[in-house]
Length: 101
Image (tube, rainbow, N blue to C red):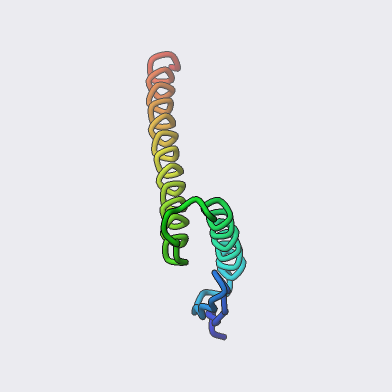
């Protein structure tokens, strides 16, 4: 059995066919829904506030910037967490080496 399938995701009133792994379907559908939600937020926020008309590509760019910034933030947090865990592990190993005989 093929572990892949083709799904159609709708974002900004456009359909995008994607070939994905079956186990990733829910993740991709949620991602498309989140993107569409964020696009709607930007469209509502910037309606009438701009001296020139914004296009779907502008809203997509703002959504992409926000998504990548959130990803980078999570990566930085994960790196800091990993660093702290390594530091605490070294401290614990040193303590056990010096105090357990």
